[in-house]
Length: 108
Image 1 (cartoon, helix red, strand yellow):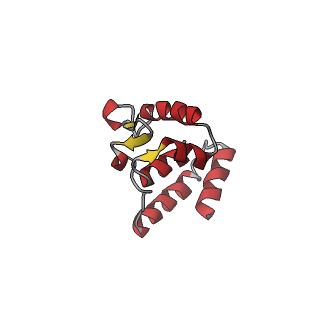
Image 2 (image 1 turned 90 degrees about the vertical axis):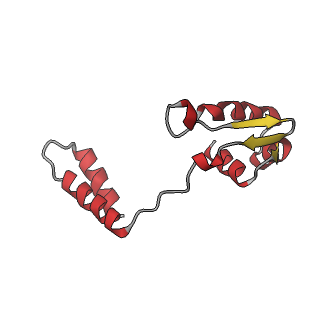
């Protein structure tokens, strides 16, 4: 589904048949997937849901700006996140599996 969202964002007014072929599915399967996308969004409020529909043989996404580009953080923000994660990893009572996950994440 995420690949479909990206694909549609880059191709306004894409033809149903072209999109179905690109994903190796039938047009009926694509339409079924498109029926689910309007239930997705950035929050549970109605105004934040994806507004995607079909008009004949074309697919239209009316609010593609709702899905932003990946978040880019500044160096000082990244440093603050690393320091916080390392501090949390030293807290007493933290499960060992969680501690190891934090340490692996901060080592990357």
